[in-house]
Image (cartoon, rainbow over all chains, first blue to last red; front, top):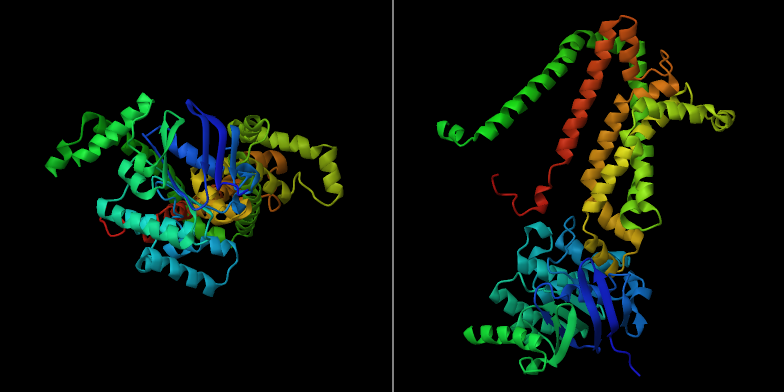
Length: 245
Length: 273
């Protein structure tokens, strides 16, 4: 039997006054899964839990059948892109992108070749010598993606990666992520509060309400009615916004 | 100009007046040393005693700074990045000397190094009491809690998510520390080195308790000021004080210069501020 890429069973965690409650989720290999929810619903905590950020919790989070916390961080083969991209500000774009290869002690020629390849896919060849402080939001985002993807991770985790981008850059990034998914074949788990984004990008969508994963739907069926009034209310807001747009 | 002054509120004017008073007071203190000391400065450089004090001060301050950094960096890392039992208590013990008078710290050192332990060290060839090794130890003990606190604050300011990302890119904890935590704390660490060094240079209380004040033996610059003043040689005393002042000014300048942001790393580099 093939283990799912991500498996979360009865997962709960308390962080100050916030609680993530009894999460159950399974994401298969090469799937694009979106976690949709309002600000403060626990989306980022769920993403960080999958990455193995936290140590004190109940339940289980596994990556390909192995408990995530039992895999050393450096061996988890995950790429993480934060909402603010988390670039290393003391390094140039080239150094950021090739960081993982430097850690693996790859030679200069290989690093250059891979960096050029990533630069071509993500159109960032022109900013390789710049520092993150001098980049625009879209350039930072693409740099963070290139850095995460250069090691060909099995799982790409993204925390509201498009929220600070303008509509045309967003559109370009949607296409680039799809292209990346096709080229690298990685599983993608991302969180967003944008209905349109979730539907356009993901195969399936999980809906978070107050620290609980209340429903999982196929993208095409996102706006279907259900018994949970809180979900209906949340989705109705998104549906109305889309009609107005 | 008139318009600019009119935007000051009463509160702002009050704070500016207080600032001017502080500046005048500090300037008077500095000028008192400079004006009295400068005439003797040239003569002091020919004095074997002052040259000895300068050399001993520079040597002991440099060694104690190296020891402080070697102890403080791992300690600060452990306090900020690891969890172990009684961590808060440990932190309190480490920082307790911050609130202790240096004379009392010196007395503690004297008790420790006059004990059987100190005698055993002496038999092994490491003399502390009334020796220049004692100066290094006194400076280290006085500076260490400050240095740990500064570096701990610097490490705390480094976003732990960056270390997490670094780990997800394959870096071990050591590699994360070397490639992320340390470079991002670089300015604070360099500033701490300069401050620790200049504080070491100015240390007197604990040193006096542990090694005494013996001419041409345990005579640092501060001890030189004390000894010469006690024997009525005001000129030599002022000259030593001026040398300390000059070194302090250079340290302050270096600290501020290093504290500047690297313009290459900011998109505001072309903006007039």
